Image 1 (cartoon, helix red, strand yellow):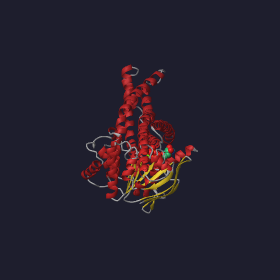
Image 2 (tube, chains in turn green, cyan):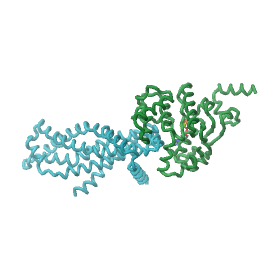
Image 3 (spheres, helix red, strand yellow):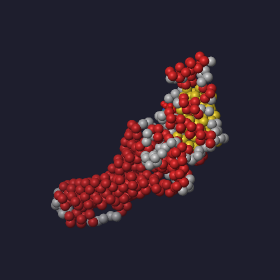
Image 4 (spheres, protein in one colour):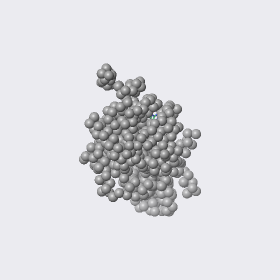
Length: 254
Length: 246
Ligand SMILES: Nc1ncnc2c1ncn2[C@@H]1O[C@H](COP(=O)(O)OP(=O)(O)OP(=O)(O)O)[C@@H](O)[C@H]1O
Ligand SMILES: [Mg+2]
C-alpha cells in the first residue's frame, strides 16, 4: 500500500501539483488519469523520489519515503519496478541485456538462469526474437514492452507504469493491460499506472484518480466513472464525439 | 554566487561518484570497456597530431636560430623539452578535452534526458558512480599512455622533419634529444596528465549529468563542459608547474 499525503510540487514557482492525497492499495491496479500536461508524470516521479516534493508525505507500507536518506531510498527502490514514458532503455545494451541488467546488479544468479528469467519476462510482453537487437532498432511500442519486461524482472513489490500503452495498437495495448493486471493480482503488488487511454481505464481501472490541472479532481472505480457528474471528468472521458454519442444514447435509454 | 553554488554542486557530485561501488566486478568490466572507447580510440588522433606538431616545433626552432654560435644540436634539445614539458601533456590534454570530453558530456546528457539515469536510480543504483567512476578510472589510467605515445611520436616527427627538409642533420637532432635529459620532466608531464584526465572526465560528466531539456541543451552542455574543462586544465597547468618545477 502506498499513501500519498498532501503532496505539493512546483517548478520554479509554478505549481504543478497541489494538495494531492491518495491511497494506492496492494493487489489492485491503481490508475492515474488526466489530460496531457496535467501532472501525472510529475506525480509519479514525486512518489518514487525522482522529483523532490515541496511538501507532503509518501508512505510505502509504513515507511515514509520523503524524509528518507540516500541509502534508505536505495534499498526501498530495489522493491520498485518502474516503466518510464519513453522506455528509458539503455542504448548500449541489447534487449536481453537490458532485461538482465537489474538481475546482474543485485543477484548472484548464474548466467543461464538470468537469461531464462529475462526470456520469461520478454515472452509475457509478447516479444520474441528481438533479444539481440538494440533499443535503437525497435519500434516505440516494442521499447515500451521491453521496459515493462525490465520493470517486472525482479518481482517488484511496487510497480509504476507511465503510459504503458500509448503508441501501441489496440490489441497489443490490451495484452499489456492484461499483463499488468495479471501480475498485480498474481503477486499481490501495488501497481500504479498513468494513462489517458479510456480503454485501459475500463479494462483494468480498479481504482482511478483523475488529475486536473494539478489537483485531484475525482476518485473512484471504473464502474463509477461513467455515472459521475464531475464536469472535468466528463469532459475528459467523453472527449470524442463517438463517446459523447454513446453517452447520450445510454442516458436516453435509462 | 552562481559559480560558488555550481562548485558546491560539483563537489557533491564528485563525492557521489566516489562513494562505494555496488559490485566491483561490474565496475572493472565497465572500466575496461571505457579504456577501449575513450582511450584506445584516441590513439589515432594523438599520433597524427603529435607527428605534425613535433615536426613543426623542430622546424620553427631551426628557423628562429640563425646565429652561428649556437650549436645546432640545441634544436633537438629544445624540441624534446617542449614536447615533454608542455605539448604531450597540456596540448594533448586540451585536444582530449575536445574529443573525449564532448563525447562524455553528450553521452551522459543523452542518458539524462531520455530518463536512463532515472531508470538506474530507480533500480537502486548510484547512477553517478556507476556511469562516471569507470570513465574517470579509465582516463586516469590510459591518458598517461597516450601522453607517452605522444612524446615518442612527437620526437620522431621532429626527426622526420629534419630528414625530409634537410633543415638539420639527423645526427645533430639525435645528439640533441639525448643531451642533458632530465627524467623528472616525464614524471611532471605524467602527473599533469593524470590531473587533466580527472578534470576532463569529471567536469564534462558533471555538465552532462545535470542537463535539463532536450537535444539542443545536450549540445550546449557538451560545449560548456569542454570550455570549462579546458580553462581548468590551463589553471592546473600553472599551479602544477609552480608546485613541481619551481
Ligand atoms: N522538469 C520540469 N521542469 C519544469 N516543469 C516541468 C518539469 N516536468 C514537468 N513540468 C511541467 O509540469 C506539468 C505536468 O507535466 P507532466 O509531465 O506531469 O504531464 P503529464 O500529465 O505526464 O502529461 P503527458 O500525458 O503528456 O505525459 C507540465 O506543465 C510541464 O510543463
Ligand atoms: Mg507523462
